[in-house]
Amino acid sequence: MSIHLHFRAVAESGIRDDHTWLAAFMSEAWDNDVAEHEAGIAHSINKGWDAVNDLYAAADAPCTDADEPWNLPIYGGRPVPHGAGVDPSDPPLMLLEVPGVSQAARFLAAVSFDALWNVAGAGLSAVGGTREEFLDHHRELQKFYGQAASAGHAVVKAVWA
Image (cartoon, rainbow, N blue to C red; front, top):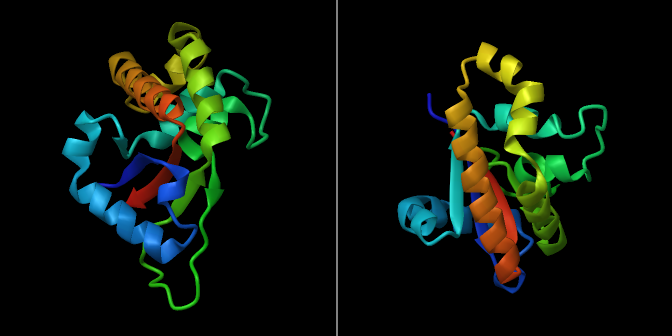
C-alpha cells in the first residue's frame, strides 16, 4: 500500500480554513503533483515521513513541544477539523501558517544533516533507511520550505492513502 504525506505551499490569502475546501484543493494539487513539484510549490514523502521526523528530532531529542523548530517540517501546523457533513474518508489535513513555515525554513537551513545523522542514523538504518535517502529528503525539504518562506506562503499538508 502506498501512503504519502503531501505538502503544498500556497499564499494564505488563497486558502480557506475549511476542511472540505482544503481537501478539494489538495486533491487537485495531488493530481498535478509532478508539475507542482517541479515548480517548487509541492513536495511529498512516501511512507517514511515519520522516520524523517525522527531524524529532525535528533536536533533536540529531550524536547517534545510541538512548537520546537525540529517538529515543524513534518508534523508542524494545526489540524484542520472535519466540519459537519464532511466525508470522514477525506484526508487528514494540517495547516502550517507563514510564521511556522519561516521557522521551519530557518531550522532546515541551519541544521547540520551530518550532525543529525550522527545521532539518529544508526536507528534509522536499522529500520531500513539509507543515509542517501534521508539526505535526499532533507535537501528536498530545505528547498521546498526555503522557497515557501521566501514567497511568504503557508503550507498545507495532507495524508493520501
